Length: 470
Image 1: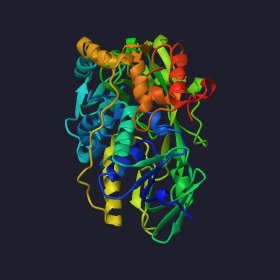
Image 2 (image 1 turned 30 degrees about the vertical axis):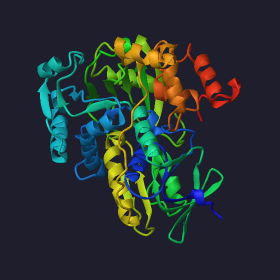
Image 3 (image 1 turned 45 degrees about the horizontal axis):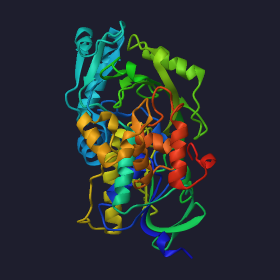
Image 4 (image 1 turned 180 degrees about the horizontal axis):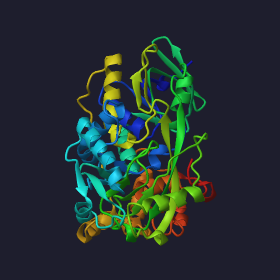
């Protein structure tokens, strides 16, 4: 017998950026929303380890879902970032080619982008490109410029979607992996985290595990191959190496190794692209990181690799059809999927979510809510405040005057806010993604003991039982 509080109109499987965006859009309508996540927090999978780029939309093949939702999602980002209080900047992107022989590839990208509806694309000579980006390597022959490309914080974007969804009534259940979905009457019974749930509709947003989730309810008609990408992150002293995102000419494995500033002032370089069998293998390799260095040097000169503060790897959900799978199942009505969401998934998330939520609305005959609140305010950041605003905040809340992470200037007040707000942090990594405590030059070497002590005190658990993640 399923408990009444485990009965919902819609169950979303997965709390990455797609699942959280879908949940937020669903809360615009009447009906109860459940989010089931196998990990202990939002943003624990692909969404936490990617290029953090809002792509312009010139790379995707015209007519594909990637092309459609990339361009739509890009156009929505200014509004989304304002509503959710998320750092976002349209810095523009350059795709550099290294010889006259590669110029037709830039022309093809420009034509693709124009067919997709991307505005402002222009091919620049070497001299024109250098005026925009003096850091280009000596081997760059020409470049395609896309002014609408941007950078965002993927952690805060995912958290923004999730927190706003929760404030509008979505129920998040963590450490609840969906292991079985069965058609039952006018809906679905779902086994997750040792509990039974019922939902009239299910939305599969399970990332690299989406094909497995589908396999519990229907025959798999697509396969996902985890595609690992390795990155290097450099100190903020290296953040002005480039002022735009710089790509090389794409290959069949994706957009290639890029060099980009981040919204927080660091420099990021990567990723590689390697198909692997294990959907949880996020290890970095010496060979992979060496490739990052070699490939990036082709487009950008003088990258100060002595200032690398960390390296990491993320997994993309590469589908065998080479496109997103976004649909309601033709045979199993009420079972929806947003699967095979690899790049440009982050850029496409707002548009995918809006499209999927409207499909669910029509299937379940939901109506729009008059009380939906689209606004979410992030944690106050003392590092970016004026002296007057910082003094005013500290006067009201003295804990904002106690600096815990000196590399990133993160205060105790920010960490407390991260723990106490909706879907609050429960781990070191959860605090890090919400506040940047531990993301600086020392990579948590000095602030971890203090953050652990705060988590221990706030959560009421012994110091030794505070977890890094999971």
